[in-house]
Length: 228
Image (cartoon, rainbow, N blue to C red; front, side):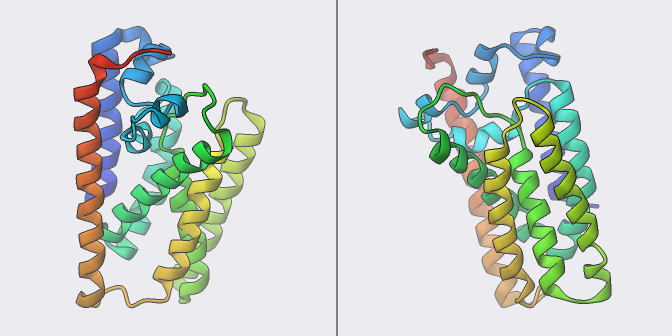
């Protein structure tokens, strides 16, 4: 099985259920702005006021069941192969760094704009970018056979972002570039040497600690969040 992919899927579902329980079942389809802000969405003005934890929590929060359904379906398609290929430590590090990069790209591009950012798509595009780059540079018939698979997902994702309004293409691009860069790096290292695996596991644990601390910070800050 794929423990990291499974846990990420579960965390997103639990977060959606938490929004429904805390703010009402109507938030299943279109969460209220207050619910999104209090549950960790990335809102640039609040980030620049010190809510730095939002750069991680936003990726586990979705704007309704259709949003989460599409993203989790995509994760279930692209995640297992990559996790099996590069290992859970590298996979979770990749996912987290792509998630952060997607949010950071939004902050750099939009500044302090009053735009709510939520969802795992920045991280997903990081996985897709990684898959394309890794499959291209790694070599081997089995891995290169996956290159077109990731390429198709990239085309679908970017076209979807151009056609459907309110899709965050900036976060997609930020995650994709980070994933592609990491794909080139990982493709050129031995995957199963202990001396290389241990540093990745250390990074993965640091990413996990940062994620858990961000949610703890959110829980402490949630009741004191002032809505702009």
